[in-house]
Amino acid sequence: MASLFSPARRLAAAYAATFVTFGIHGPFFPIFLAGRGLTEAEIAIILAVPMLMRVGTAPLLGFISDLATERRTVVAAYAFGAAIAFSAFGTATTFAAMVGLMILTALPWNGVTPGLDTISLSMVRRGLVDYGAVRVWGSLGYVAANVAGGILFARTGAEAVFLVLAGAFWLQATMILAAPAAGPRLAVPAEAGKGPSGFADLLRSGPLMAVLVGIALVQSSHALQNGFASLYWRSIGFGEAFIGTLWALGVSLEVFLFFLGTRLTARLGPHGLLILGGCGALARWALYPVIEGRWAWAAVQVLHAFSFSATHLGTMVYIARAAPDRLTGSAQGIAVTLTGLVMAIAMLSSGPLYGWLGVQGFWVMAGLAAAGTAILVWQALRAQPQRSGVGGRSVEPS
Image (cartoon, rainbow, N blue to C red; front, side, top):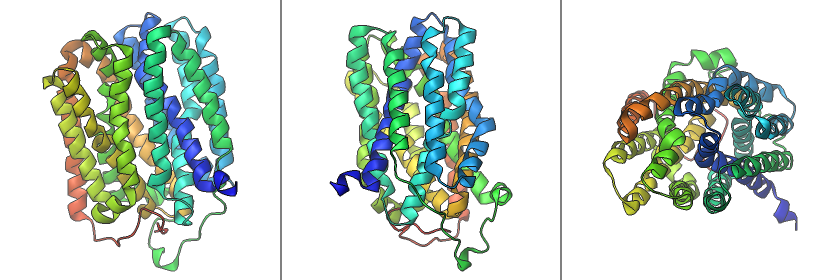
C-alpha cells in the first residue's frame, strides 16, 4: 500500500488533475464564451488575460515559492485561490465581469504549473522521480478531459463547460495539496560556484535569456491554435466530439515522448530537444492552411508532440542545468514571464488575425516559430559541451 502513495504517484496524480483543468479550458472555454455571445475580439482578450498576468506576476510567484520553507504549501494556496475565483464565473453575464473574474483567476493560477514543475525538478535532483514519467500523467489527464469533454458537451451544450471546469479547478487544488513535499533545498556544490547566485544573476545571463526568448517565441506560436482552432473546426463542420478527439490526438503523442524523456535527453541534450520542438512547430503551422479532411487534420496533430512536448521537456532540462535548486522557482518565473508576454501579444493579435485571414493566419504562427527556432539554433552553436546523463533521475544542481 505504501507504494500506492509514493512520491512519484502522488506527483503524477497532481499533474493529472492539473492538466484535466487545461484539457477542458483549452478546447472548450472559447466555445463557452462564444455561447455567452462574446465576439472573436472579446474572446481573444479574455484568453489573453492569463498571459498578460504572467508578465507581471510570474517572477513574483516563483520568487515566493523559492522563499517558502515548503513549496507545496505555496503552490496549493495558488490552486485554491484560482478555484475560488473561477467558481464565481458562472454568475458573470457581461464582458467586463468576465474579464474581471479572469484576472482574479489568472493571478494565482499562473503560479500552479510552474510551481508544480519546480517541485518536480527538486525531486528529480534528489533521485526520487523521473520527470518524464510523472509529467506524462499530465498529458494523459489532458487527453481524457479532451475526449470526455467532447462527448459530454456535444450532448449538454456550451453552458455545461463552466460547471465541469469549476470542478476541475477544485480537483486540481485538492491533488496538489496531497502532492509530496520537496524538502529542504539542496546546497550548491563547490564546482558550481561560478553559476548564478541570485535572481539578478539569472537576468544578467545572456545565454539563459536568449534561450528563454527562443522558447517563448516557439511556445507562443500556439496562440492561434489555442484560441481559434476549435472555432475553425466547427466552421468546417466538425462536431464537438471530433474536436475533442483532435485535441486528444495531439496530446496523446506527448505520452510517448515523455516516456522516452530520459533517453531523448541523453541523446539530444536540452538544445537538441528545443530545436526539435521549434522545427515541429514550424512544420505544424505551415501545414494547417493547406490540409483538408478529417484524416489529414488528425495526422498533423502528431506534430504537437514536438511543437509543445519536446520544447517543454527541453525547457525543464535546460533550467535544471542553468539554475541551482534554490533558484529553480525564480528561473521558472522568468521563463513563464517571457512566454506570457509573447503569448499575450500573440493571443491579442489572434482575434483580428483570424478574423482577417482565417486559417491562413497559421502561416504567421509559422513565422513566429521560425524566429524562435533560429535563436535556439544560434545558442546551440554557441553553447559549450555539457555533461550527459542529466534530465532523468540523476539531474544534478548546476
